[in-house]
Image (cartoon, rainbow, N blue to C red; front, side, top):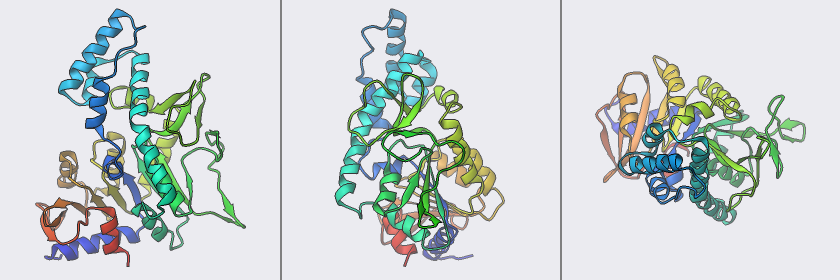
Length: 345
């Protein structure tokens, strides 16, 4: 057991990366690229008007929802208001309309700056081995992971075939081949949907090209917070994607969580089962460790962990050796780029 926090940080970090971790991206990973989070989305939704065609009862429910939203978070407001289906769909569309243009801005930056994503460096490092697949699990709608794979000239797979109008993959996972060998692939399991998934009038879900505006006559396939999240995630494509995410999490030898707040029960259960009493290291990099993340790490259910957050001196780390936290002066190692400088030579 080390009494030096920097040595402890380095030892767990290197062990995690050497085990080819499953990567879990939270909202903090998106915020680093200017994509707004829940507070900004909340403000946007407070300004969305109820459709003029709504019945008076539904208009009252929308008003109740916005009143609740004004004093609480989006998930709690949706749980309490219990909106009809078409108003829940309005929230999904309004969420897409507000957030997707920010994702498109990242896409435009990625076209000219192939060094934009530290995630690309991580992918390439993990593939500098016998590893054929990397698994990324995320509740985020944005395409940061996809752009990062593209920047490294890597194949990525999200549960859909390849092309401009992408049908959902069936009868097994398709593989791109280079010569006679299957290409190394970044599998990105988006458990709450994606900005490029849409449902047509027949209920068929397709993947469409990157766009700055919502295509006509289709609806975005994203799950917003609230009680409907648990119903919708039993439907396709979420059911199949969740099975793939669970399989990746259950078979993981390590976890690298980036900007993840541990606020999603869909993912937490598997993490607890895998980490409890097992030698499966978990590393969390985030600007500020959430209360739920601290509760999870302090519960004793994670046998080996490292959590790194911002501090005035550089970063503050938490681990089984330093459960109360310890300052580490120097570089802001809570940022993925700085973390990789430390871990990858």
